[in-house]
Image 1: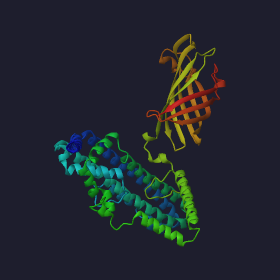
Image 2: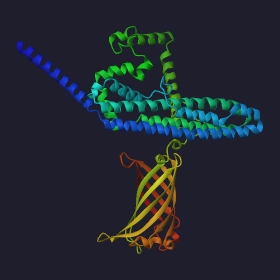
Image 3: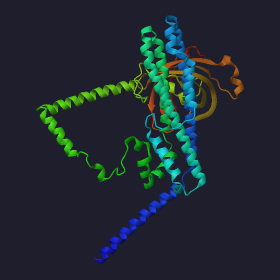
Image 4: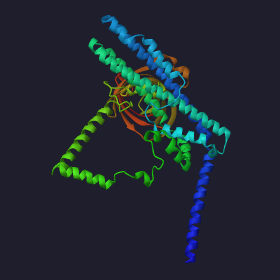
Length: 480
């Protein structure tokens, strides 16, 4: 019996010391909190804030321009109504922009709830108020305060942008009611499009904020493991204020007065019994009908580009999701290969091409590129690497259906061996190629290459070339 007690005591002490050691290691990790994360977070918040302000300025200028255009057209029909409805357009939109640029003072959130932002802000608040977890390192504590200030400033700008979106939503409703009777629906539709794209642009900035880096996730995981932070989050996070969690949340006392699962099941069963023998079948039919309606609504939302804006507005046009992206975000880089067997005039060659495309919309892309033709010799027993030509390319792709695209392009190619760049300067020696064909995109899981592009193209100008080149071209490319 004594041996049993000794074994139990040893197991208890082992668990106790293991727990103490784990808590100590967590403390050590938090004390060595990565300051690089704080610098990156500070820069990320400032970058998003700058993009939000500059993007808002451009959008508000376009909206003001569209309102002035509607005002001029309405003035031709009713000048008094135009002045009453629009007033000083420039002044109103300048006030909106000034509101976005003004310093923010957060009192109560007006925008949508952002889970990662809430965790981030609460974590920084916790570390600011409990700097002993950081080893009382003044430098790190200062960076935490700086990062918290940047995050709160960005949060305030997002709330101000939410107020601007609300103003535009109310403005759209009012203009629709007033302008329909004057027949200015076309101009109003353009205004609605501009307002929609502004709302989507703001949502894209929120998505950037809600997409944490690996370093950010690692740093927050260190803080989340602290029991003190878990208790702090329950009392001080925005989520806690939304649901007003009780102090005894999670305990048995907090469940007092709530209905049990069995009582709810009994209540449902009593209701079904009183509705007749076919009540269960009718309920199932209604549930299936509701699911079918939800599926149709989901498909409709996907066709319209998804439920992008938080207000749940359905646009009355097909949105172009590229409109909310910056110029660099709309660029797509790629490389492709094209091989050709040896002939009487050419050795076995491989064209290595580089390209950059610009997405006009979700279906269309145009771009330019360049190629270099490598010669390998006549056969495998006579390998000789040579420079057999260069080329400049332009292309356009249009999505037909699924992953299939209609492709076309125009190229200038120098298809002669050369030893120096000076040789290819004579444009009279360059040949033209006109390409039409079809492309198929294969999605990849590669981190570097996002998708594979296979092309079958017909060069309808190849018959005019001397010497004539292969009219059918098969290219395999990789985009990133």
